[in-house]
Image 1: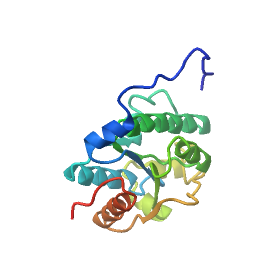
Image 2 (image 1 turned 45 degrees about the horizontal axis):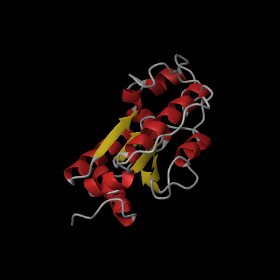
Image 3 (image 1 turned 90 degrees about the horizontal axis):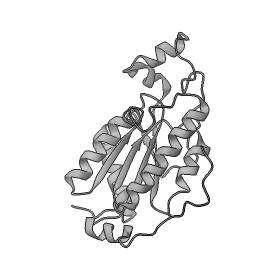
Image 4 (image 1 turned 30 degrees about the vertical axis):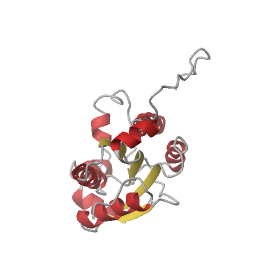
Length: 203
């Protein structure tokens, strides 16, 4: 990361996050899905985005693979590149929350310190860490990209859960059983947003 220039200052705008939230009819927030590859993060995040859209919530999904096609296309999978990947996603998510959106992010984000740095960007009840807890044996059975097998064979290195660590969240807002039906987990997450007054219940 390059050093900030002292001549760069933040310019406040006349239209604030609060104005956008009133116009949207809900508050802005981040749903930070974390878990092993194959845990079901992307599937669940997509289902949540779809459900929120059906409820009239303005939302957007930042998916790990999609982001690496563009914004983070210059990064690899070393520890430093993973850290920079998460830093960039955190800053993008912060802008989206400022726009009043409910942002879902689906990233392995294996390091507790990196997830904490992202959390620290947000106000209380703007950041919700959702740990999709799926046994690695199940993740390997799913393995839609064949990555675990390649990692086991030494064809790829620094793969989370095999030769690179995954630090389990210490105090997530929700721990989601990755073996539960997706519809049940979606209900859990929507209920959380209602309880935290991010969105209004529609039932």
